[in-house]
Length: 268
Length: 238
Image 1 (cartoon, one colour):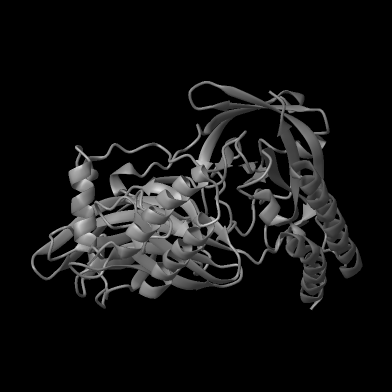
Image 2 (cartoon, rainbow over the protein chains, first blue to last red):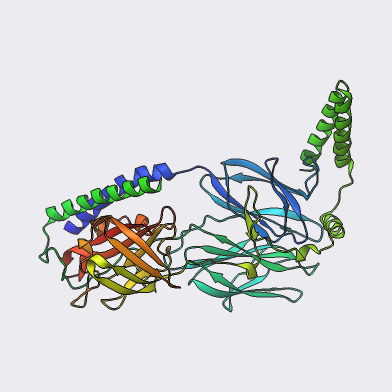
């Protein structure tokens, strides 16, 4: 009972502290990353009619760009084409608040390309883990995806994705499908990040291949730091009455406030 | 989509022609050139993606796929290779030793992560200092965490006296490869574990800070656990 009251009071303190800091950090804009999966195509990338990348080479990925909430349009024109030329590939898409998206340019069949949007936000990753995501962005049918020699139950269908929490380190991904499709690669997965593997290219042109991208900022913190088990340094080893413990929690909160403010001041 | 692309080109042509009708001679020449480019673009037969790529290949002596990879695109939007073989998870040199002259501490540092219960993994001895290997290395952006026991199985730990550190004390961290970084203590506090600002202690961005952590305060004998953490913040000074 005493414990739960203390815990509840601590929570109140934490919440009171957390709200202003959160409000200050809150931003409406989303992060949008662009992956170029059309082999051989050098392109000028326009975002909302503004040229943002000139002669962008295939098999490259941009840093995350900040985009405001609302409708946006990406146009891909042949490198060097006039800004008013008809785009070779175009896509209008909606950006949500505080989201993370990736726009992937890829083949849909022998002649056509498109841009598919994937949601990168997902769940936060548990402390000490990484995440591997497989995305189908290729001109081919369903494929089977395997992680460390374990196949996923369901096939990976075009423009869909699958993900799995993994330990940080090297993992083997393998994609197999019709017409002898078989691609595999060893992929290092960092802690707290999602490493995305894309199947891109075209089965009929025999250009299927794998690309990768990293989504950062999904990490969680450890729950605590248990660095003592003997009581040799204890300020008191008697059972603690409720009131002082409450005061301690509040005092801790005050210290936390001070720390937070100082750190913000120092880093700002 | 097809119409969206073509309409502005046609409109531009009309406007340019109108301007050309009342401009100077030099202006006329420029505008005529612009008009011709614009109308050429608008009237150019539509090419398929394979045709565009074939045309690009014929213009470039080097096969497009063999294009050397620039380390970074520069310009307003930065970009990097998306090829799996080009993955470069750059890691800063990890800490291997820590010295705190004010407390007579000179200890080895082990890289540890997260225990099964979700808490930070700590050494299975009293004398080793743990570095949180998933966070920044000392001196990098964010909070580099070094944690060690205040006591362990009835023995005093290497951080037994951590609460005695005060502003101005030095902490020297030796990194793998032999380089050292010096930090100066800014603040020391005992914080109840319930209100520990864990996101601040383990932040991976922002100004570099070295965060030393141990346990302290009240001891819960039943849980064999302290109710507070002693935390020391030190900023890089050399």
